[in-house]
Length: 482
Image: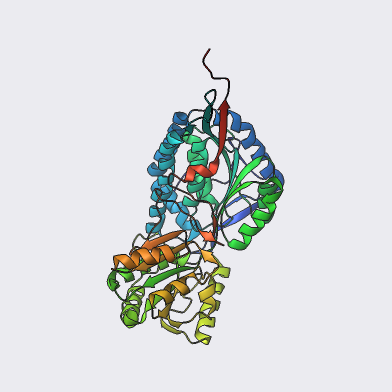
């Protein structure tokens, strides 16, 4: 597919620019291992210029009306939908995400822009009943300032829009740092933001392989007032430390270890469908995908048979074909991690019921492991690949204990027909999001985020705007009768 949305330069202060050093890096298609194009490899000095441009643009942009900001976001949303096929194509060739899922992500990611175009006009304050007769007390909300959005490769569009949508709606200016694996989608939507009419400096996108150096600049620069990061817990902790000197506001959406619990009163066919969509979406490379399948003993064998059959029917192949369901892993490191987790599990007693092998390049067979135990590496670490370990449990209490036995708390899922159990288990699970008889829970209308070492802050929904605004209290005195 030919598309004018593939850009070879970064976008700073309304201009398409290269790195001051002249350095570039190649963007590679993980499905073919072929280079797509080269983009600027920017350093701290380049990033500093983007921050300064965003800071200079902030006063005028924050003073625009909510209605004006809403119109800009709506125009951007419309352009994303108009160019959805091109955006999905770019996403697929740089991330390896299958075409059907890329099209879904464009719709999902654009929905955050549509949502916050509407929420921009609803950032309400308060009038507080005064404590004395001569005073009036008012609370208003104002934009934080320059926002740095550091995003991952697994959702090249949605992880940007989920952050910049509320930031732009609130009146903030943004500097986006996409990962080096998937910068092209970020640059494509930057081009559409330019076409939508955002003023120079309001929206900036920098590309770089120098993640540590660039991240440090974004965290330490005093003009950046807020950092929103999606990625691993270890990196999130580093960014938090680096942001401490300027007391930045942070939103951190970090690692997960999602349990998927199947109780003996569950609809097994529906549970299998939920497990498939939640585990194997983007080849298991999503932050909320299932990492541990916990099945009650009474339905364990039935679930394993049906689940294994469904996994065997998943179609692997050309990611540009809309009926293909499984693509490649993002890189060699990801492939090696999957192989290491399977090797460790088998050595500790697990059985492979299907899959378990690399099938050329970065492609790996969708895999099911039975007889999994808490001692296995895959029980403790996020595999980020197409491997589903299935664990036994006896009682509801045991399932909850197993599910909560992790440092992470992003997403959890369970299936049961018992309404009382649904309430008990949902309340007992130590996670920021819980899917009950549902394996696909992400939506722009609900708050997304975790607890424990999965981070803090919420994205999307009516709560999303709050993390990009400051609360200011106004006390009017001297209001008494003449």
